[in-house]
Length: 408
Image 1 (cartoon, rainbow, N blue to C red):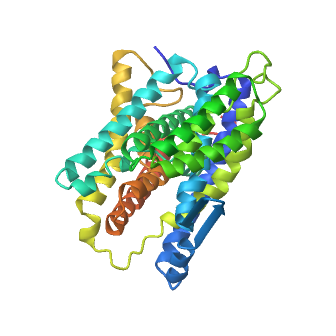
Image 2: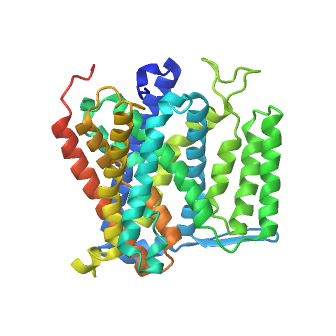
Image 3: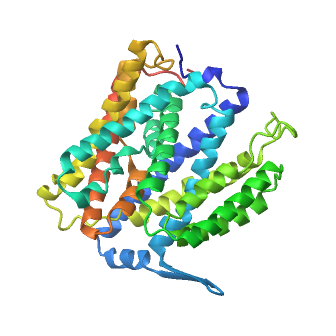
């Protein structure tokens, strides 16, 4: 019987985990502020300036290469590739030397994450199955925003056991991996074989560098930029270039002990360098340009339409039902225990927190809906669901988690 518990992680991993929680929680609060500012800007005399900011034309031209996009798309296609790069670095680090490295630690979060994707998607499909255009967004309510969720948990202070943060972050990492696969398979279009071949060559070059033991980050990042341009032109979403680059960065190398107690691997070095920029700049900027929904014409029937209600039910109901149901099943079968310091009531609270789907949900919605009206409906559902999950989850956990001293 497996149990996810931080006491089984090595000291270095625990230090990295503590720093990860601190950055994500603080970044989550900044993310919330950015979303609120976007809503204020979109519903005030600043609306015209806000829209003009999102549509600022930005062009990069080098010889025959010409990339011209509004600022909104540079953020969504370019800066978010860096976010996905960091996600890939996290996944690889956790899989090789972190909380996903032990199969016994992996069973509970893997099954919970899978159920937390399937149940919300089924609820969304049940409400929107008669609308082919709305059905493109079936994946919108499937992901958890770890920064937003940890930001809310930070408001509860020492009440929250470390094991809960560990389980939530692991579920969110697996969620992100599933979301990456969903984007790759369901939200690519108009594929260019030539561009994909060049992308494959860039990826192959990174693989050769990795196999030859090259630990300098420069060649990987240079090839990563080439890969991003190729993927951008290929019809596959450009952010996946960040994922591919992250998976090629070296981490564990027994020949030179770059993963020992005193020396960081290239992967850890890059992750530590980029994580603050992602937490405090890229994600808040993404939230600011994507969450600015004008509420002036919104009516009650708009909020209760099938598309936004599918997202709300998926996140607020589907996430906790899927996650808690899977955890209970694993417990009954004797395959996994609840983490240390968590009972059924705490698991329900964790499930509610996983219903905060903000960043990845907005991102998938931007891929799924080109129609501005559909996209606005999706944003309405995402904002409403994330707010409801955060508020209900916060007060639920405040009621069921015992107060404890900062020392434990």
